[in-house]
Length: 186
Image (cartoon, rainbow, N blue to C red; front, side, top):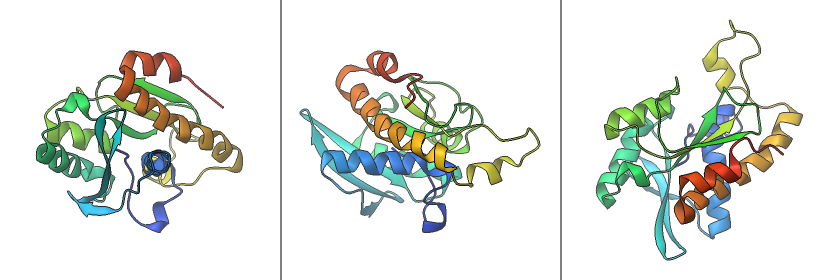
């Protein structure tokens, strides 16, 4: 799953890193995430003998869990097999962090997924988007802002690596993905 907000006005925002990473991954796998179902855009593809479902919820970030739940219920996918790629303001732009499970950490998309699935036990690939410039800066304004040119350059590599980390989780597990990609920076 890649998290973001639908619509061209959000395409290059910090909050849409999950969508961007998933689109790059889909291109690498030779598919397009463009079928409308499960309150999202999805596609399926085979990878190393496994069927993968790629999903971009179209519910807006705060309701992402609805889309994730619909797809996972339909295909009977347990939370432990759902990999979510999303933005993280606690990481410098361009850094990645792979985790097997955890809390929402203040991320409303993850909070929605946890609420809908009734579980925190799903792997995630966090994509660093940088912290707010000042503590009083509005969080919503920050995650809906675009990147500077230098941040975008760092991000382009990390978005590719996020998809590679997700495939590593599929093929070799979370520990291997964490060893290879945690803290990675262009």
